[in-house]
Length: 233
Image (spheres, rainbow, N blue to C red):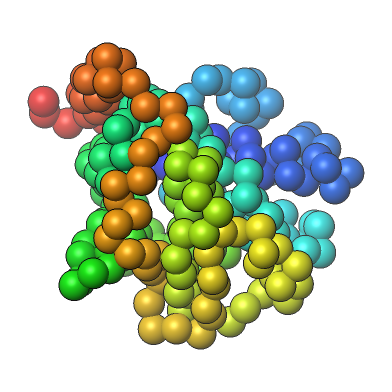
């Protein structure tokens, strides 16, 4: 069975191309994704569909930096119950740990990782399956998307540095000042790097009473997903 990613990524992409005068019907034609799927609250799409549709969107819109614009639209709620649990966490460190734990449990090919080296933390997307790798544009979208989530959750306007192991897309400079991080291209790795004290930054929507409830819901959702995929509990 192919690994799956949140369908909300495609919802964001469809909304983006609509602003550029391309209808959802035109954009999704031949993709196998119906308008009915887009209206589901939380749905999933095969891993490589994101790569293919993002490439298709860039070609149709003639916007090489589309992945960066798409990242600016990312919200925690795009990750369903996992995002909701992050939204009520006490601080950024707890929120990132929730993303790390539960996103990794949902997809074998897409595993966010938080690691420390001295006074800095490194956030990356581990991709253990060679047959399922994010394209450069999908990497820009998802890595910078996590930065945007952190920015919305904490209210911080500056969140460190993102390194990307690809050339800078044409026109990307137009949005650099909106991202909340310094973006360095042609690097060795794809990483978001920030000082360790950022982990203690309070979440603006923290709710200590609701946090354990939503975390328990994340665990239930994982169990349901395993059963749907035919895994043993």
